[in-house]
Image 1 (cartoon, rainbow, N blue to C red):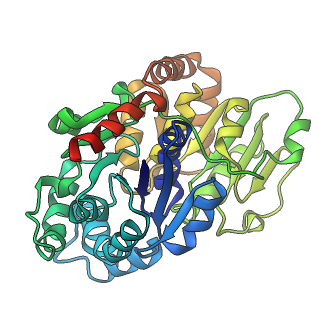
Image 2: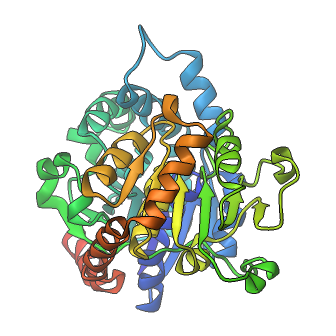
Length: 385
C-alpha cells in the first residue's frame, strides 16, 4: 500500500516519524511525506518522496504572533492558533491534491498537523497520528478542534473531538516514565512505539576532528533548530564550560554562524549541525533546550541532561526529567555561566544522574520496535476499506 505521512516542516516533527516510515518501507509499502516546500529537500535526502504543501514555520509564527487574540495567550492557545488556525487551512488544499495524485491508503500525521485528519476524512482513507514525545496538553487539541472545525464543515464533514487526531491510532514514542497525565484521556488510541534516534541523512557524519579527541568527558550543547537564537543562552553555556576539563561541542543550528560565539580554545568546538544519533553514543552529558527529540534521543543512550527550556512543551519536559532525576532544569532567569557549570559538574560527578538515565534507556529499549506497529497500520486500511 501507499502511505502518506504529513508533518509540520521541522526537524523535531519529521525525524520522529522516520523510523515508522522506514519500517513501512521495509515491509514493502511505499511511503512519502507532505510538508512545506523548503523542507522537502530534507525529506528527499532521507530517502522519501516529498509533496510540497503548506506554509513554513516562520510565516506561521509571524502570523500567530501578529494577531494572537485577546490578552496574553496560553502556550496551548498559541499552539492551537499556529497549527490549527493558520498552518492547517493553508495546507489542506495541497495535501488533498497530493492524496488525489498519489492515491495513498493511509495518512499518518504528526500530532500537531491538523491538516492530516481532515484531508484523510475528506478523501475517505484511513488516518493515524504520530507523537513527537510526551503528550501535549489536550487543551491544545480542544482549542485546535474549534479552530479546525470550518475545514471539516466546508467539506460536508462533522468536526470530530480533538480535531480527529485520536480517533483511530496514536503512535506513542514516549516512555511511560516521562509520559504526561493527558495521555490517559486518549489511552484507547495509544500504541507504544520505541523512539529510535534518527537525524542523519546520507552524507552527514561526525566532524573529522572528533576521532582525534584526547581522553576526557565530552559534553554536547544544543538549543535545537528553532530556539537556537535565544539571546545569550549558548553564550552562557560556552562561558561556563570553556575552562572546564572537558571537550565541549556546541551546535548553533543551520541558520546561525558558529563564528558568532567567537574564538574558542581547542577543546571547544562550535558547529552548525552534527547528527545527534552519531554523537550521543560518544558523549557523557547533554546541555539542551528540552525539545522532545533531543531529550528522548539523549535518554535512549542513557545520557543525563542539563535542560534550559525556552518555550512550548520544553518546560514540561524539563520539569519531568528533573523529577525523574535524569537531569537538572535551569529556567531562563537561572541561566548564567556559573549555573550551567554547576549543573554539568553535577551530571558528570554524581553517578545517580547517569544511573537514572540508564534506567530510562532500558525502559525505551523495552518498547515495541517500529516494525511491530506495521500490522496495526495495515489493519487500519482494512477497517477503512
